[in-house]
Image 1 (cartoon, helix red, strand yellow):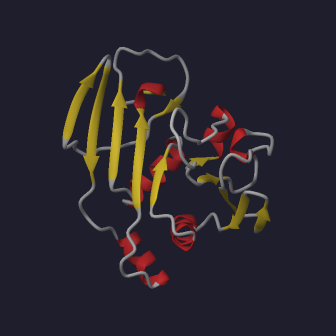
Image 2: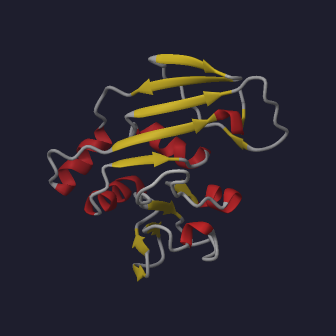
Length: 184
């Protein structure tokens, strides 16, 4: 899953490389449909869900799902539930990641940090003040593994609204801080 700005900045394919098998469903949050349709995320390599506030419908492998900006997280989670998607990797930028962090809609996070990498510009890292369960050094990187143990109110609302008592969305946040500016 990525948001508009990450899609515009990075033009990601969000497909599996160097492995056999089916590509995962790609998810783009693009309220105003700003991402051009010639970008990689719109190619025919995988089914793609485009959550937006403008249109609904299907065009080849692209499914446009209309949601409101004001209530987008519960509507996004409901749309993913309807699509039977129970696990999501969020590779979005600061805004997208921060929405999930602030709402407690994550189960695991992997934070990669490189203090020796100095960037002059880039995307600021989200605010993430959780304690890791484990941290490992790998080359010049510190990799922290975090798990959120509590069930949050937003998830309870989604369960009630969809009637899915056993529904549990696994959200993995990849916070690649070595590619983002560090702010204090």
